[in-house]
Amino acid sequence: VAASVRAHVGGLDRISCELSGGLDSTTLTFAARATAPAELSLLTVAARDRYSEDETWARRAVEAAQGGQTDTPALAHHIIPADQAPYFYADLTATAAELNDEPLPVAPGRARAHLLLSRAHATGSRYHLTGYGGDELFLGLPHAYQDLFHGNPLTAWNHLSGLRHQLGWPLLPTLKALLNRSTFPHWLAGAVTTEPQPVTRTPLLSWGVRQSLRPWFTDHANALITEEFRAAAAGQAEPIDRWRGRHVDIDAVRMGARHFQAMEDIGMTIGLPVAAPFYDDRVLEATLAVRLEERISPWRYKPLLVEAMRGVVPDALLARTTKDHMSSDEHQGLREHAPDLADLWTGSRLAEHGLVDARQLLRLAAEPFSPVLVEHSISSTVAGETWLRTAENAWPTPDRTPTTSEASR
Image (cartoon, rainbow, N blue to C red):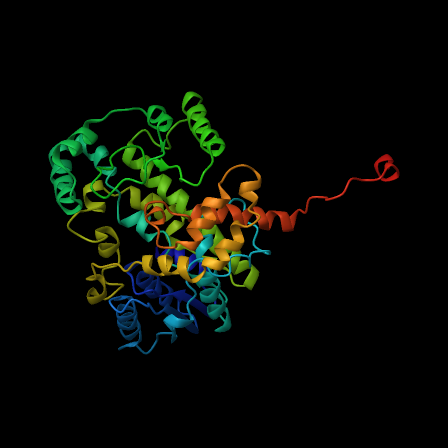
C-alpha cells in the first residue's frame, strides 16, 4: 500500500485525500503523509444522518496525524457541510464532457463526486487519493469459505458458523450451498432472475450473486439479457479462477475498478488526477497471497489491513469496527430529484430502443418510496439512460436525408 501511494504521489508538493473517517481512507491519509508533501489537504463530507460516526473518526485521524511530530506536512482539513452535499440523482444531465466507455452504476452519485473533486482541486492539489477498493480487498466475501472448505473444512465451518449467526443464515440451506459443486457455466446459465435480489438470510456461496431483472424492463429486454447469459454459458465462458472464492474476489475488484473509472473521468474534466491505490495490481496480489483464514474473519473488521498498518496508523484508529452507509441519501435523492427523473424518462432513449417501460418509470418517479424501488435499484437504468444521451451528444445522428448531389459526392 505504501509503495502504491508513493508511485502515485511521491515527490509532489501538494496532494489531497478523501478522508471519510473509515479505515480505508484513514490508511491512505497516513500513507500519503509519509511521502512528505509540502501540503496535504484532507476532505470530509459531513453526513446528514445524526447517528453517523464518520466525521468524528475523521477528526480523530486529523488530530493523530498532526500531533507530536515536527516533520509532518502542513495538514488542512476541509469539512464539506452536509447541506452542501448533493443528494444522489442530482444534476443527471451534466455529463456532456464525461463519455465513459460504458454505462456505470455510479452515475447517480456523479454530482457528489464532482463536488468533492472540485473542492480538492481548489486547494491546489496536484493529485487526489481515494480509499475505493478497500472493501473489496479486505472485507472478504462469504464465497471464499468454499475454497477454505476444500483444504481445511473444520476451520472453514468454524468461520462460516460465525458468519451464519451474524447474517441469520439457516443451517440446512447453508450446508446445501457449501456442498454445492455446480460448474461456472451451469451457474451462469441461471444467473439472471425476475425475482428481487437475495435477502440477507440467503446463503451466498456460489460463483456470484444472481442478477435481478428489473420489473420495468420490457419482455424484449429480458429476452435479450437472458439469451446473452445462456449463450455465454453454452459457449466458452470460463471463471477467472477455478476456485469460487478466488473468482468472486477478483471479479469484485475488477468490477469496482471499472466503476472507479467514472471518478477518474470526472477528475480529468476538472484537471485533477485521481487514484485508488487499493486497486493496484501489486496490492491485490499481495492480499490474495495471504492465507484465507488470516485475511478475513467473521469476528474482526478487515484484519489484514489492520495488521498491515500496525505502527503506521495509530492503534486507536485501527480499533474502529463500524462503517457508515449513505443509503438514506440515495432514498432521499429519489424524492428530491423526482422531477429530474421524470424528465429523464420523458423521451427515454432506452424506451425508444424497446428496453424499458417509460410509463412505469414515470409512475415510479412520482412514487419515490415505492416498495418496488426498495427491492430493485434503479441506478443502473439511470446510468444506461444518461450514457445513451451523452453518447448522442458526442456522436450526433444525422436527422435529415442527404440530397442527390450530396449523396453522389
